[in-house]
Amino acid sequence: MSTMGTPTDSTGRSLTDYPRPSVAVDVAVLTVDEVLKVLVVERPDGNFALPGTFLHPGERLAEAAERALRDKAGLTGVDFHQLAMLDDPERDDRGWVLSMAHGAAVPVAEIPAEAHLVPTTETTDLAFDHAEIVDLAVADLRRRYSAEVDPGNFLGEQFTVLDLRMLYETVYARSYPKDTFRRHLLHGLEPTGELRREGTGRPAEIYRRRGTPLPSSTAAFLLQ
Ligand SMILES: O=P(O)(O)OC[C@H]1O[C@@H](O)[C@H](O)[C@@H]1O
Image (cartoon, rainbow, N blue to C red; front, side):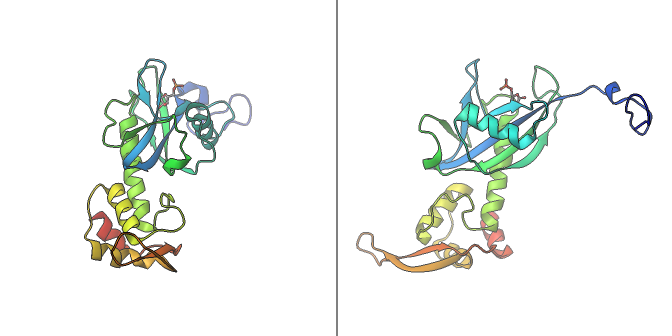
């Protein structure tokens, strides 16, 4: 920066010599509703997109993401995180727009009833590069679910191993052998001492999360 006059970079060029992109934020809110789904909103042209918005002057990215969720999807209090900055100069045909993509996992009961949810495998018609953001969010969710038991709290506080296996089969879109799944996931579970009696079979033990990271062997099993 020069000591007087216009601020410059280290080569002496003024910062205003560089064309500036617009910056946007987008949030892929994932949920489990029979299958893994993502929340989308309708745009004025009738197309669907992730809730997103342009960054306002003086705003932080997280504040813009919060505003997009509130104003476009009626969602507040969502715990989201950054996934990646999408920087294809052609990604928005209105101009040069970078988008900071975010991911979130929200139990379906906390999503407004009128929200549009689409399966994460049916996103090819989404506007911009939003199908790519959904793919990033799904890969991120799978990594998180392999590191910790149900970090998105889709199952609530207490559940059986069967509930957990059904959830994991939905998140990873595959099936797992019953006994191997149980052996791997038990590392992250604490018995509540209670039993759930369903049908005529043996009552099922009820667990809660232990709150400790899962071993890397569990991640390898889930992601294989
Ligand atoms: O919805 P508006 O305000 O038109 O524009 C914001 C969107 O523009 C896109 O580049 C971003 O991905 C974001 O979703």
